[in-house]
Length: 140
Picture (cartoon, rainbow, N blue to C red):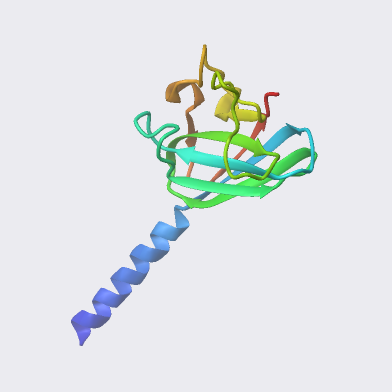
């Protein structure tokens, strides 16, 4: 019984410690051109997964001018995000026949690529345990 109680207390302490280190990422997205649709964000934690397999995602109803999205309870570490304004609410980033986005988009650090999206290292930022407030501008 004493061993069971000790295990329960240790487990509770570890859970409390892990929750205490969970960080929130709040992103203010500026230059939203309309209230139509949703602003979507995908979060990545490595160059290998960048723009392929997000570790988190969120969306908020678009607010003309500025929309804010918060992703909660993230471990501190290196991340990059990609954002797009799904103005027509079809659930995907629209592009023309050449693959050029026709909906507004942004990457963390306002990173831009050459002839395509930026590299993870250009968009990468460090999320501290205390959380982070970031601002990015949509590209039209």
